[in-house]
Image 1 (cartoon, helix red, strand yellow):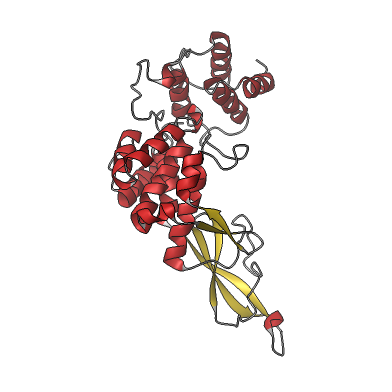
Image 2 (cartoon, rainbow, N blue to C red):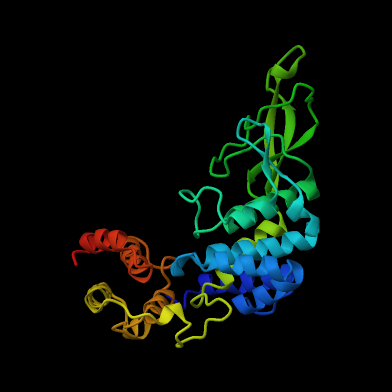
Length: 317
């Protein structure tokens, strides 16, 4: 529920991380873009704002979190980062040129079918997170899967590796893990085939850290962008919901244990439904079938009729 102490503790920590990294005492979009005009420049900040507006309402944390990374990264790397070509380590362990961030921002997209948030901002957030980590800890030589619990034999060693060397690998945008070169147990003789690797500690660079922190810190309310006033015509969350779909979701939530304070319904606007979602602690505190309820809720707010219909049918509505 909204009173979940673990969730509230995580949010407080995230707010503190945003303050530590960006210097913002309150994680609001107005403050984020005000800082953006200073760090990124007026034109670039305006481009970011227009792209953020393309995101579905329930996914606005994606572009705004990416912008938080872009502010931290530009402060760390300098404005020249935007005009330099970005290099990316492929999963084939080759460095590929991806072009200048300015060009990607101007284009507005890289691969629309795969991007989250409806813009290129998420990808730019990944680029600058990696470049911040590269500056701090050097270039990685390989990738590792952070979900794999194994610690031995996770990377391809360079030909000149020897026991005692410590190498760097990537486990995600801005994430780095140190890898120790060790002798294989029971091995004799000489040669790289007798050496192995063992993962050691890992770190997430602040440019990447602030992205996750912003998403959590700003998740306690609808994300209104500059120029959007709650309850006014400029507020996209004030749009009316389909009464039948809203009633169906409300009755299902009542039947499945949500209390009146959490619900504060029936819901007539997207704001009311999204705020109820946050009060109910979805999806942090209500797993299981509530995942399908959340899919229906998101579909209703984002006007995704196909996703809404599928989820409502699964709920028996």
